[in-house]
Amino acid sequence: MKAKKKRKSPSGKPTNDLVFSAYQGTNDGIFPNVLALYVRSGSTVADITYGKGVFWKAVPKRRYKLLASDLKTGVDCRNLPYDDASVDCVVFDPPYMHTPGGTAHVNHQNYENYYANNVGGNGTAKKYHEAVLDLYFKTAHEAKRVLRSEGIFIVKCGDEVCANQQRLTHVELINEFCSLGFVIEDLFVLLRNNRPGVSRILRQVHARKNHSYFLVFRKSITRRLVASGNEQGKLIEASGAAAVPRVHHQTT
Image 1 (tube, helix red, strand yellow):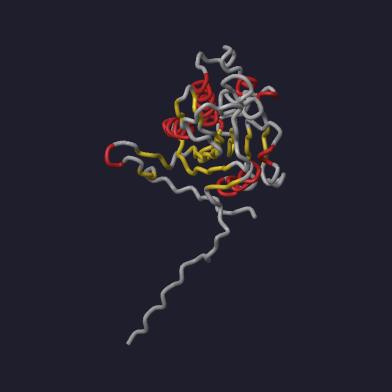
Image 2 (cartoon, one colour):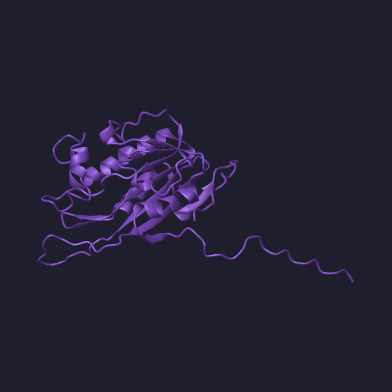
């Protein structure tokens, strides 16, 4: 009687040393994990809202070829000085809440200081939350231009209440960017360490937001989201296209 063939053990090993979808902490704590999962070492990364480089504090300096810029150094994220299809990853962290007046968000998100929102200097007739979205949308077009095929677009954002209306910014961005041809790959939630407050309150209407998001998009020519009929939301491969290998190394 022929001996039974021994079943092959599945490869890999059990572990909980993983990159997770939610973290409590600061930007420089979560950002290396986002990079580790989606951006290969040696890649050219354009951080187009670099500021003081807070995101990069825990990233080894020689791991990526970093192109650092922001508006204060003369580079507008809506008009980047890079050639078409020349970078592997774009990182975008704009001021994502408008300033409603007074000092409510002055130390947190100075949208007006950076992009002249509400005073006619932002290149659009839009105001408040619509102006914030306009900045994201225009930058997405520019990011798509400079990204190579299968390039990664990492976007920091946060939801807000504007004119007493709930605006789920991360949903608005996902919908718009996917309509431009990006594929949404991941969503990371960052919970802040401290408890946010307000200068004065009469009655609370909405939950006070104490989290933000890192959204990860891919400029993909091999994959697209079908959003019609019975195939809504189904991820498909373009005919005859080879799948692009994913990055799975992690930081410790």
